[in-house]
Amino acid sequence: MKAYRIAVTALLLGSTIGTAQAVEPVTTFYLGLGATSLALDSDRVFDVPTRSPGHTPKIGSLVLGAYFNDQWAADLSLGTDLSNNVDTDVVAINGYRFFGENKWRPFVSAGLSRFDVDEATGDEQTDQIQAGFGLSGALTESVEMRVGYQHFFTVSGDSFDDDAVNVAVNWSFGKPAPAPVAAVAPAPEPAPAPAVQKKEVIDTYELLVEFDFDKSEVRSIYEPQFKTIASILNQNPDISMTIEGHTDAIGTDEYNQDLSERRAEAVRQKFIRDFNVSPNRIGIMGYGETQPIADNSTPAGRQKNRRAIAVVLKARSASQ
Image: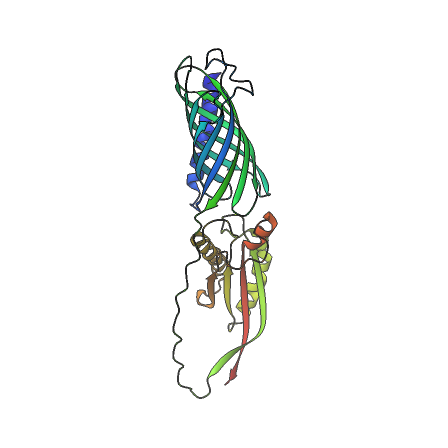
């Protein structure tokens, strides 16, 4: 049974770390403070009821971690007993997988840890594998609370099973401010020429495409809109188009800027590849997360902000 539990937990841990690494990094770091009631195995300390709530070590922890994106995080915690029940030090690494986009979200966790238990009847230092579950809540845009449970079991030496209930408050930081835009001197006005033709906008058509989280693939549900706009473009050779890409506020400014450009380019390539629109008639512009149209603190708002807009300018020529 112990070997089975180790295998299952190792598989969960490997999946957590492997998938988190597969996602292109959108890292935001966090600092946290944790409080844990650690119910040690009853055989760890002689003649002490270490699983009784009044005798369990009460661990205070300092946490340093990172959100890789909206679904994955990992952290390192250093903790020590603050209750004088059983002098215990804990070092732990955990990975987290979050589910959903609500303000309060469930998660699963898995990791590795080392316990240092004074007055232990067996090994004072033991290496553990842990797995658990919990609930994460966004208190503000940068403050998160996690409440969770984990089960620990040793991977070598004496066989112990321990349990923990944990509460942590994490503060995220390190999101860089938008890079300043370099001032560009205006180009000198060209000398006037006779009978110069200019384009005056007389009509516009808009294509709105929304994207899945951290994705730039255009979904097939937008095919009818593409056909309508492509037909207008192909029937009117004097029309040009600009595609604007946008993101929600999850992730760094640099990553979101790149993602918004990739979304705009994906829409552009669909017109070129599927509808034979000339590339030199389509421009793109990425705005990152700087122009939200909805509240980024809600799942519905973030969905609306993950978008690309194709603005088609139908123009006529007129003498100046």
